Length: 123
Image 1 (cartoon, helix red, strand yellow):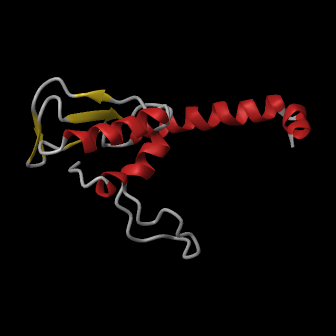
Image 2 (image 1 turned 180 degrees about the vertical axis):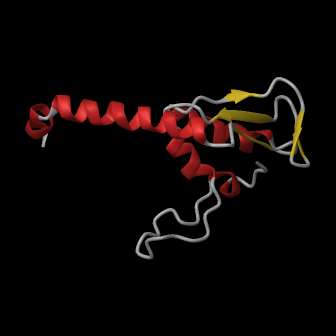
Image 3 (image 1 turned 90 degrees about the vertical axis):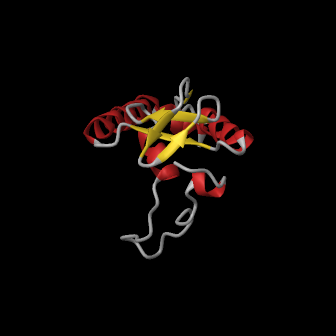
């Protein structure tokens, strides 16, 4: 309730602060430092995924030059880069990882929603 949240204001704010600090610490340990995605054929799909990510306070940047990673070419103006070292690290990982097995067999809510695949984008 609102009264409960108000009574626990400091505790909730500390929890939130610690959550995001922990995410940045996890990101620093991740060998992957950024995610690049895009579509040379359909810029709108990449734009809309970038727009959705930005609405979640994810720091995202359009590429300014053509780059190649892992055998894929990402053209400037048709692709985006998301650095992982940011407070929304955990959300980014959940949006972009391809998870096929789960420790908890009861959890299924987003088990097949890898966002770039939903937008038919390479990443």
